[in-house]
Image 1: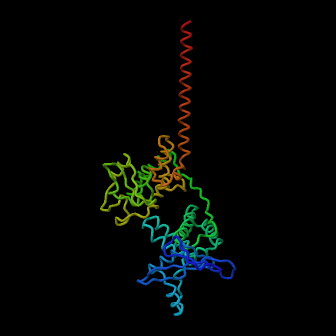
Image 2: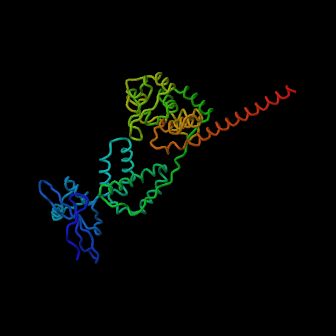
Image 3: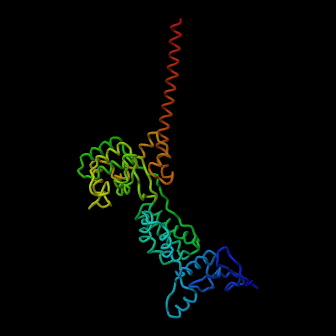
Length: 388
């Protein structure tokens, strides 16, 4: 006979008993929770090990929701059903887990981007489903469909967000992990954009001839500092310290504020750049934060005869990094800090340029040594002839 003795778990207020499994000769754990609500001690069943896929962690999550009043007690649920109401408070759908996940994140660009991707791609397909109900085939169809509409890296971010939501639910004891592995799209994230010296010369000529007050200076700043497009849009005069010579990057892509050096050429550009009543260095309409400048920078790009697929601002950030890497005078760790990359893997795309610079330096050393040896030998021969 199964033991009816209460057995504690590592979670406060959660215990189980061994009982006969429904429709089987095996035994299973039946989890119970006890807590106080409104000053009253409540003890009730959380669920069965096999039938309800219940775990101690999941039972603890249910208990926390009951204590907070976020879900009804079993008695309240039974009364609601008797009254003809549909109660699904304990059903942790993807949408419900997402709201919990979002609520525990700081309000920054990263979570806003996640919210946009969730609302557009995940909620319509999976929002009403619990994680264990997610069909692998439908996730595969989403991955294949994304190939036609977004970049591979964006598709990877969307599927990674789905995994993060489910993993968050698992950690909080709200759901079980997915019974399968989500296949991620392959991403070639090592592409870099570069310009020849001739193309750079044509670009500067096109910038000087352009009449727009912001487009040309923004392109120069991207090239001189490696700032991202969004960082240029958000750049305020208060973020530029001309005395201590640095630029503060506030609320950047990675979520943590950064500082980069203000070099002489970027400093001269900003000092000569006209200020308005707006706090922004490159303001948009009405002095507000700029949200777009594609039309004007693309006009400059076309006048300079740059490749059609070259991205005027982000591409110039790559040119900045490529010039530094190919100089052979900047190590990849320093380059990572200048580009404010969170991971060295992002900077690794420039490794081949630095390796080429090191090879050139090594070849130069070899040539200089060879020339020194030949020069010494020539002097010796000359000296021997003069001694005869």
